[in-house]
Length: 226
Image 1 (cartoon, one colour):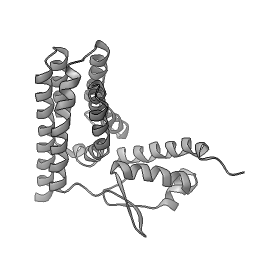
Image 2: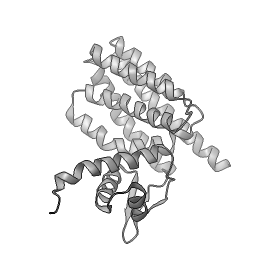
Image 3: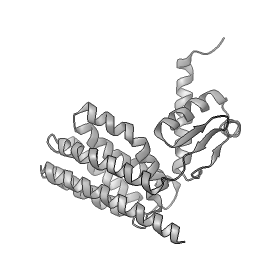
Image 4: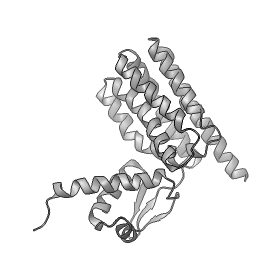
């Protein structure tokens, strides 16, 4: 008897997590082809849940589907795309931070502090597990603030952008010459939130994104100079 779609969903979720972990562990390079048959054999699953997982990854921007060719890891951001992504973040995240700063709670501030401590702990990148945890802590910090804004429309806008932000983290920030800098920026935002200064927190978030933008452009130039 054929399985119902709901029966397949948990397996598709598992495949999504497994593939995302492979990205975070650096097993896939920008532009690399993803062979569904080979992945099916490697992960010991049928192709159906893999296709569902890849479709979800396509929605995040991490992979692209090419007609008659299948899926491929998204390429690196070019300079124009990187600048536009950061400009979109600059338009959105300071506002989210300001709104979160107007309605802080002890629980929220503790969760933010925990994400920063995890980021600091993993900043040395001693192994793939640390990379995975670093990226998760970085994402958690921004998502906590988006949720605390208590504006579902702003939060939804950030979440729709977050896949592209994750692509930026995976393929850009891990090559940064200063892995400690994001944790310092996050801590400054947290301190402003904890002091009840929503405007300063928003300004510091803006500076954090500007810093990330500058690091990424610097790293791109260093690669280009060879």
